[in-house]
Image 1 (tube, rainbow, N blue to C red):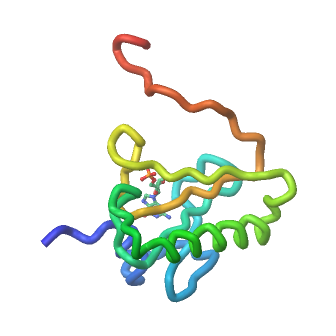
Image 2 (image 1 turned 120 degrees about the vertical axis):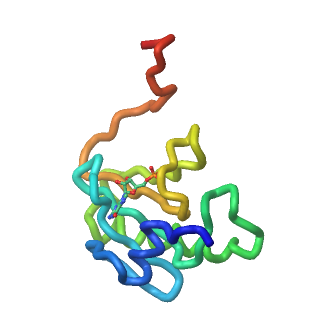
Length: 123
Ligand code: 5GP
């Protein structure tokens, strides 16, 4: 059997996290390595590995996650100036934890655009 992901272990209370929101469907907690003044991860409790593993039966759950993201953003004082929501998918998308999660980032002006990671060819 596959090892549980780090996020499944957080859901199960096996490892600690700084939780900002929880309900029966999802959990949100501060990222351990924040890349912005506010960097919160919002995850479903259901084990869905990535965007590629979402099915039509998850439609309501995915909508719920975005309502929760909006609620947390407002609570964190991000609504007026704005924020960014990122969902990395798979290797090229930069996903490192294979349990669906949305990064909610804000509290400063975030740079844009992202792009190809540096390689030996492009430096
Ligand atoms: P990904 O690269 O998969 O889109 O994002 C995974 C995120 O999970 C990263 O931003 C990383 O800092 C965060 N992360 C990894 N392990 C832990 C952990 O044990 N606790 C918390 N709170 N965040 C984690």
